[in-house]
Image 1 (cartoon, rainbow, N blue to C red):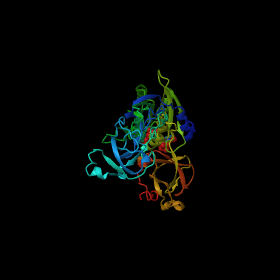
Image 2 (image 1 turned 120 degrees about the vertical axis):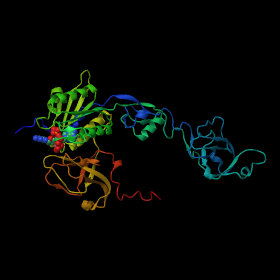
Image 3 (image 1 turned 90 degrees about the horizontal axis):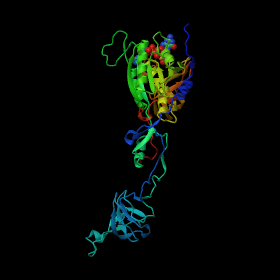
Image 4 (image 1 turned 60 degrees about the horizontal axis):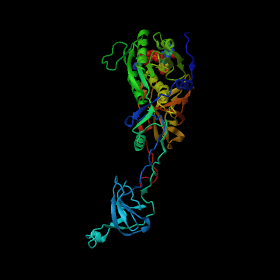
Length: 453
Ligand SMILES: Nc1nc2c(c(=O)[nH]1)N[C@H]1C(S)=C(S)[C@@H](COP(=O)(O)OP(=O)(O)OC[C@H]3O[C@@H](n4cnc5c(N)ncnc54)[C@H](O)[C@@H]3O)O[C@H]1N2
Ligand code: MOO
């Protein structure tokens, strides 16, 4: 019997080994326009107060609150963007003010325009020769009403974003607010993707020759790398001869990438040449993992000439689903760690099965599912009708059938066991996509009572 050369290790051991060999990449300074999705390498503080001046929240009149309702002369206008240098209020006077304008010194509240009226005399054409505008304040307001005090949104010197935080859309706005026109973020990982196999031909091949199939892994893994925030390059297809595979590996080294992701050539056939090559060029940390799909998953590191850095090599199995699953389970956390994520692991949640699932007695299995949120369907038995997260299987899970990954936003973690897990069972699931893009709209989920009233 042909013995497998590599010790079979557990999934957590494989993931820990990968992260142990994965560095956090150094920082670089990027303009704010390029910061989306990056992880901050330094804490950002506010250089000034927001608002920097007491600002009106409403269009209306700046008043001295102790004056109360009554008719008052309007001594000036404070528009957004103006200076109040030449405008100050004494009791018995008001100033017209717009939203976002500085409140003039002396005023301590704003009365919104809906709570005022034009003064009758002024409306009728002025009061006996004095051209002064007047207004009737109809409502008493407390001091501070409708004024944003200096620093009430952001105080000067306050930490607005921590090192290690990911820059999303709101964070771009926050950075712009504090004047961070450029900022230090962790460098994006550089990654190369290589397919292997004599049977594999370019996707644009119209008529397949005998024994040929189109290369789906390369396009998919390039897309996955881009989705995970890496800069990816395409190394093409390596033929099943050692010289060619080695030439491709050398190209990855010459390109200066941080990560090489290959697919295929890691199992037990006479043309599975990757592991021996990696042994020769570097260190193979594992070559078999107890998981389905993805058993021959391989991870190696190679020293780079003239550098203290190491090239991380992920030898993903050739079956497209195995490649897809393994990329999510080990490459995504590695790319996240490189990019500066403090917690790079995939997020786990508990979900309810909507159909019975057969278990594998030999390997723990990652079953691709579409998660939805809503009333659990009748198939969930006793839990039916409750609100919760539920998982719908993508069907036949054979590792050649990439349609089983279509729309999948999670991988169920099914234990290695005999038998079937019944519908209605709760299992853990790892998120592989943004739940905001759930393919199914939530069903029958009520909004908070009274929300639309
Ligand atoms: N004797 C054994 N044979 C196999 C074992 C085993 O333990 N003992 N493991 C099986 C498992 S599990 C897997 S997974 C595969 C992995 O094989 P390889 O990683 O060596 O991949 P290949 O043999 O090159 O290809 C497998 C399969 O995938 C197709 N393929 C490969 N590359 C692509 C691509 N870029 N695009 C689309 N499809 C691709 C290839 O044609 C094969 O059908 O090994 C089992 N064998
Ligand atoms: O591990 Mo293989 O991925 O089961 O087909």
